[in-house]
Amino acid sequence: MRFVKKSADLSPIRDTVFAIVSLAVKDKKENGDLVTDATIGSLFDEDGMFVAFDSVFEHYNKIDRKVKGAYASSFRGDPVYCDNVYQWVTQGADLDLKHCVIATPGGSGAVSAGFMSFLEPGESILIPDIGWESYELMARQNNLRAVTYEMFDDDHFNLHSVQKNIQTIMKEQDHIVLVLNDPCHNPSGYSMSYEEWGLLIAYLREVSKTHAVILINDIAYIDYSYNLNRSREYMNCFNAFTDNMMAVIAFSCSKALTSYGLRCGAAVIVSPNESAVTETGTAFEKIARSIWSNIPNAAMANFSWVVTDNREAYLSEKQNYIDLLHERSEIFLNEAAECGLPLYPYREGFFITVRIEDNELVTRVHDALMKQHIYTVTVNKGIRIAVCSLSKRKTAGLAARITEVMHQVQQEGE
Image (cartoon, rainbow, N blue to C red; front, side):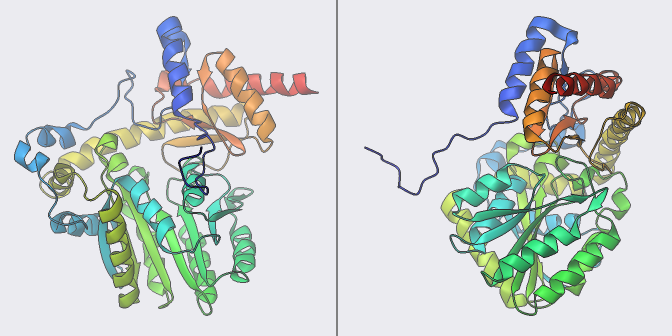
């Protein structure tokens, strides 16, 4: 007899990361430095050690255990934390919009709350064809249909594909929900230009004449932009929203503070429509109460301390790793260009993705790489390289090795 409800999705989770990480760890125990592990989506230093910022955790370790053990003051999150998140997320932008902030378990909690709140079962949500696999899982869990737009047209954002898919969805429902992971897209490392954002928002304004438009903007990696001073400028495009438009900006302390396990983040809800912001905040608060209740109190307190009392030390320490990311990515990009390895357009961030549009070939190349002790992550239409966790020494020569394996696999298939 089946005990879970008939509509429950019991298909196995397609684990493209942690299962491969385990294989890489096992191989490293057996073969040591022979192994190249480009799987882990967390910051590692040049000695292969996990990075947890001193500017974050020295203070966290000193927080009184009564603060660590206590409930947060609200299901919405600590008010001081929520205010600091808004100021942090929108710094450098001049938003003239109503807003509210709901604390969530990581950025994933904010994204998930958006999937739960805006559409009825059976309706469609628009997600990128190359992106974080959990978007599709969230859609299935909420009985939504995940429709994919093509992320790229050659080396730029494919606005035409977004438009084409929205026009189809508009015929079927009165809400349009679009997911964008930008800037520092996972897994390609692409960041849209200000002009691309402007064109997108201009189109969504037209859509909003007849349909409610909700943009879920996943900014998990924004704090590793190579130009931090301009990383939020695109949000000024949100000032062009009509009353029928809203953005849910999904912020992640996990990435920003190298505190992945503390599960702290926030949904920043913005719109010119005050009642819509209030309603959405209420819906998100009820999701919080019914699922996670509240966010770790000390994690919120520590974020507030870091971005106010210890801001300069934190920014300085983080900048060292942004510079290191830049150095690693330049090594890979330059060598890929030299050996003709096809890549999706990379601008900044944790990941670079090899462009392989045949998913059957993706699987074969991935398997062949592992036989050469090279561990990567498969994504739709590509193979992800985590430069965030790959030392410069291990990055050097990797593009040529991948190219050689790809050529061998392609020849074997002919």
